[in-house]
Image (cartoon, one colour):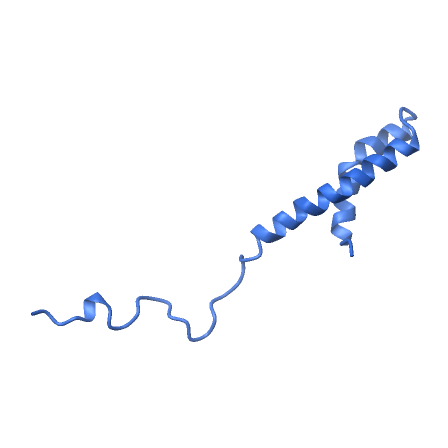
Length: 79
């Protein structure tokens, strides 16, 4: 299913063609073709953005070590 954000972004990408249709410079079929081309491009760009930002805002799971593990190099007894 296509997300509404993809359709909105595709509409923004094809807005110059829509404006040229309003000013009667292009045909409606060209505007629709440009919108249909913009939909998969917008879907790929927003999917890449979601992939890059997926890890932001996640917190550590309870019980995971926040610092160095006990028994590391500082805990060894000198000889």
